Length: 199
Image (cartoon, rainbow, N blue to C red; front, side, top):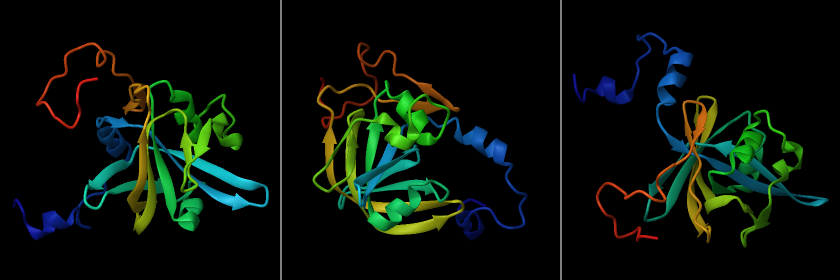
């Protein structure tokens, strides 16, 4: 029955378990951008940057400006975010597949132990901002929620920026990277939005 309390609460315990492989296959049909979440800790040797690839990122609210990310609790950056209570979202450009693979822990020629060799600058809030980012958001954690094998971080945006050269973003679909082949030359379809002027 549409809108019944049982349906609103989600899958009940009496229903069969969802097959993990099938679940991943279904979610893989949803195209996402690719981000690297960065944070930092102070060590006797100086600021130590940390990063991990995340595509579970979304905006939540405009007023106040809120976003959320989901980070696996087994990820090395998880205790860093818990300690720092802040992170940056770096939205990757389409040429940044190598960085995405390295920060995800996938096979890569880049040295993960050395922050994947990524060029970055520390923001005013002390967060690593990747030179390869199309755009970035600096965030402070407002709330956390345990969710399965991940932690959901709800965070307030305290700073942001855009790349001056405006490269196209990196996309991810069914376990592979995609590029926006015609976006730079073809006419855009859909309802015009004054918030995004041409050029």
